[in-house]
Length: 133
Image (cartoon, rainbow, N blue to C red):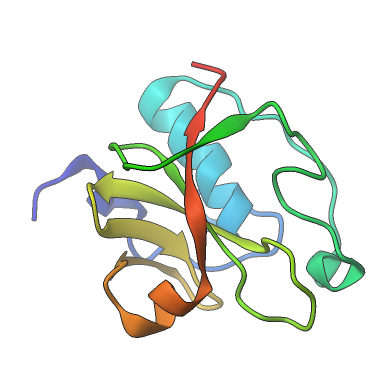
């Protein structure tokens, strides 16, 4: 596995982290898109349990950041509702090997996962392509 994305694997989880010392799921997007594509994603402040307040990570903060697409390409965003008690999108990952391999920051570290996993399928919201490029 000599893909460029492997440098992100194992980055520790850190709430509001934005660098190789630690990231959360949105922080991984910020770091990845800046490092790999030179794109500065908009940033915003959020609490640890922000999604319990009914906020959607993309549409409630920056609705023009990405558009929903049916078929994923490399560098598309994958959004999930991981069921924290409210029906909003509250987790994100990045497609690194279409259609199924994604990077995501879990509560311990950044991992490579497969969207064919029954757990991920259950919480899948959709694919989104950046409108900022």
